[in-house]
Length: 146
Image (cartoon, rainbow, N blue to C red; front, side, top):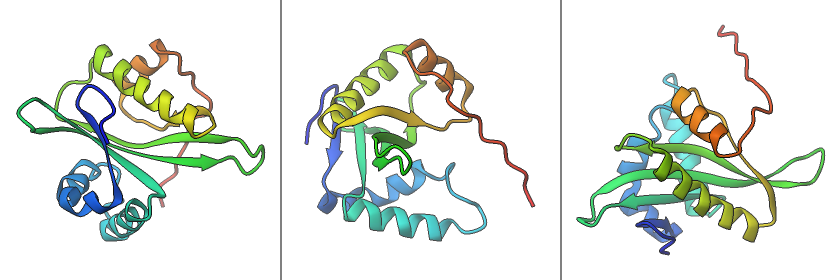
Protein backbone atom coordinates (compact mmCIF):
# COMPACT_ATOMS: atom_id res chain seq x y z
CA UNK A 1 0.00 0.00 0.00
CA UNK A 2 1.54 3.31 -1.09
CA UNK A 3 1.28 6.11 1.45
CA UNK A 4 3.43 8.96 0.09
CA UNK A 5 7.07 9.98 -0.32
CA UNK A 6 7.95 6.40 -1.23
CA UNK A 7 6.65 5.07 2.11
CA UNK A 8 4.78 1.80 1.89
CA UNK A 9 2.78 -0.16 4.43
CA UNK A 10 3.71 -3.80 4.16
CA UNK A 11 0.80 -6.20 4.13
CA UNK A 12 1.18 -9.29 6.33
CA UNK A 13 1.97 -11.57 3.37
CA UNK A 14 4.87 -9.23 2.40
CA UNK A 15 6.58 -9.42 5.82
CA UNK A 16 8.64 -12.57 5.09
CA UNK A 17 10.25 -10.92 2.07
CA UNK A 18 11.52 -8.06 4.27
CA UNK A 19 12.04 -10.03 7.49
CA UNK A 20 15.86 -9.85 7.57
CA UNK A 21 15.77 -6.09 7.01
CA UNK A 22 13.13 -5.70 9.73
CA UNK A 23 15.29 -7.67 12.14
CA UNK A 24 18.32 -5.50 11.35
CA UNK A 25 16.26 -2.35 11.78
CA UNK A 26 14.98 -3.43 15.20
CA UNK A 27 18.26 -4.72 16.61
CA UNK A 28 18.67 -1.62 18.84
CA UNK A 29 15.29 -2.33 20.46
CA UNK A 30 16.04 -5.98 21.17
CA UNK A 31 17.01 -7.23 24.61
CA UNK A 32 20.50 -8.59 24.00
CA UNK A 33 19.84 -11.42 26.47
CA UNK A 34 17.08 -12.92 24.35
CA UNK A 35 16.69 -11.33 20.90
CA UNK A 36 14.94 -14.36 19.46
CA UNK A 37 12.04 -13.94 21.91
CA UNK A 38 11.47 -10.36 20.74
CA UNK A 39 11.77 -11.26 17.05
CA UNK A 40 9.40 -14.24 17.39
CA UNK A 41 6.76 -12.01 19.00
CA UNK A 42 7.34 -9.23 16.45
CA UNK A 43 7.01 -11.65 13.53
CA UNK A 44 3.83 -13.15 14.98
CA UNK A 45 2.32 -9.68 15.51
CA UNK A 46 3.30 -8.43 12.03
CA UNK A 47 1.86 -11.53 10.34
CA UNK A 48 -1.41 -11.15 12.28
CA UNK A 49 -1.51 -7.35 11.66
CA UNK A 50 -1.37 -6.55 15.41
CA UNK A 51 1.64 -4.40 14.50
CA UNK A 52 2.29 -2.78 11.15
CA UNK A 53 5.52 -2.20 9.25
CA UNK A 54 6.17 0.68 6.89
CA UNK A 55 9.22 0.87 4.66
CA UNK A 56 10.76 3.83 2.89
CA UNK A 57 12.53 3.32 -0.39
CA UNK A 58 14.25 5.67 -2.79
CA UNK A 59 13.77 5.95 -6.56
CA UNK A 60 16.33 3.16 -7.07
CA UNK A 61 14.15 0.92 -4.84
CA UNK A 62 16.79 0.82 -2.09
CA UNK A 63 15.40 0.30 1.40
CA UNK A 64 16.12 3.40 3.50
CA UNK A 65 13.68 3.31 6.42
CA UNK A 66 11.77 0.81 8.53
CA UNK A 67 9.00 1.88 10.87
CA UNK A 68 7.07 -0.45 13.21
CA UNK A 69 3.83 0.78 14.78
CA UNK A 70 0.85 -0.58 16.65
CA UNK A 71 -2.55 0.71 17.67
CA UNK A 72 -2.98 0.36 21.41
CA UNK A 73 -5.67 1.09 23.94
CA UNK A 74 -5.25 2.85 27.26
CA UNK A 75 -6.72 0.47 29.84
CA UNK A 76 -7.69 3.30 32.19
CA UNK A 77 -9.33 5.70 29.73
CA UNK A 78 -10.33 3.41 26.87
CA UNK A 79 -8.73 5.80 24.38
CA UNK A 80 -6.72 4.45 21.47
CA UNK A 81 -3.27 5.70 20.52
CA UNK A 82 -0.73 4.96 17.84
CA UNK A 83 2.56 3.72 19.26
CA UNK A 84 5.77 4.13 17.27
CA UNK A 85 7.63 1.04 18.38
CA UNK A 86 10.72 1.21 16.23
CA UNK A 87 12.10 3.60 13.66
CA UNK A 88 15.25 2.99 11.65
CA UNK A 89 16.68 5.19 8.92
CA UNK A 90 19.91 4.81 7.00
CA UNK A 91 19.66 8.56 6.33
CA UNK A 92 20.21 11.24 8.93
CA UNK A 93 16.89 12.20 10.48
CA UNK A 94 15.95 15.58 9.06
CA UNK A 95 13.08 17.88 9.94
CA UNK A 96 11.59 17.35 6.47
CA UNK A 97 11.72 13.55 6.70
CA UNK A 98 10.31 13.47 10.25
CA UNK A 99 7.47 15.88 9.33
CA UNK A 100 6.52 13.65 6.38
CA UNK A 101 6.65 10.52 8.52
CA UNK A 102 4.54 12.09 11.26
CA UNK A 103 2.08 13.31 8.60
CA UNK A 104 1.58 9.74 7.40
CA UNK A 105 1.12 8.52 10.96
CA UNK A 106 -1.35 11.30 11.78
CA UNK A 107 -3.51 10.22 8.86
CA UNK A 108 -3.41 6.59 9.96
CA UNK A 109 -4.08 7.48 13.62
CA UNK A 110 -7.09 9.57 12.60
CA UNK A 111 -8.53 6.75 10.48
CA UNK A 112 -8.01 4.32 13.39
CA UNK A 113 -9.77 6.65 15.86
CA UNK A 114 -6.65 7.35 17.92
CA UNK A 115 -6.40 10.37 20.18
CA UNK A 116 -2.60 10.58 20.14
CA UNK A 117 0.72 9.27 18.80
CA UNK A 118 3.40 8.22 21.25
CA UNK A 119 6.88 6.75 21.32
CA UNK A 120 9.84 6.20 23.61
CA UNK A 121 13.25 7.21 22.34
CA UNK A 122 16.75 7.50 23.70
CA UNK A 123 17.77 9.44 20.57
CA UNK A 124 18.15 13.08 21.57
CA UNK A 125 17.83 14.49 18.04
CA UNK A 126 14.62 12.53 17.44
CA UNK A 127 13.15 13.84 20.71
CA UNK A 128 14.12 17.41 19.82
CA UNK A 129 12.62 17.19 16.33
CA UNK A 130 9.46 15.68 17.79
CA UNK A 131 9.04 18.46 20.35
CA UNK A 132 9.44 21.02 17.54
CA UNK A 133 6.61 19.18 15.75
CA UNK A 134 4.09 19.32 18.59
CA UNK A 135 5.03 16.32 20.74
CA UNK A 136 5.47 16.83 24.48
CA UNK A 137 7.00 14.70 27.23
CA UNK A 138 4.33 12.79 29.09
CA UNK A 139 6.54 10.70 31.35
CA UNK A 140 10.13 9.60 31.70
CA UNK A 141 11.12 5.95 32.06
CA UNK A 142 13.60 5.29 34.84
CA UNK A 143 15.27 1.89 34.86
CA UNK A 144 17.36 0.09 37.46
CA UNK A 145 19.21 -2.82 35.87
CA UNK A 146 19.53 -5.94 38.04
